[in-house]
Image 1 (tube, rainbow, N blue to C red):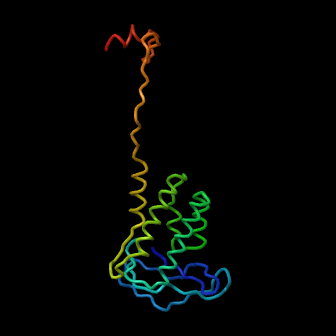
Image 2 (cartoon, one colour):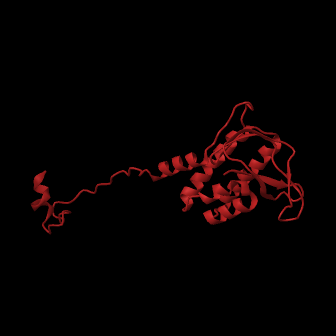
Image 3 (cartoon, one colour):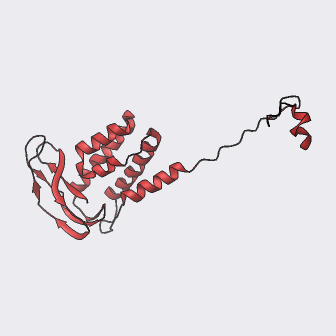
Length: 190
């Protein structure tokens, strides 16, 4: 069930707002407050906008610039993870600490670094599309599960390696394992 995070107005910490939605459409959030902040005890705001909540997907129908800035924090976390070559545990902990509304994203991070950076690249591309959309009236839906599944399918397909066949000399042992010279064994078949 998707949870909307709150962001502290004093220190900027993200924390659970207590707002949970399931299979709801055209939910308008405006001027909502939540608190206290677990870090400083101050009050926080819940992002304003119009949202659809279907399954584990949050669709942003319209949102002010403030919500876009909160997604930009996730972009910063991803860039820092790539620059510092952080492990998936470090990235997951940082996402859970600073963006609890996206903690489900932290739970599905790939285990090895190669897949992790590929996955983070896909998430970064999706956020970039969301935040730099030239048409604000266009509805954008990103299903995290589908993005992850497609990334894993692409990563798991074996890349065909160029076969490097070494020429076998006539007097070398036959590669079939018979113990005979190649010219007396499999070499006579050619």
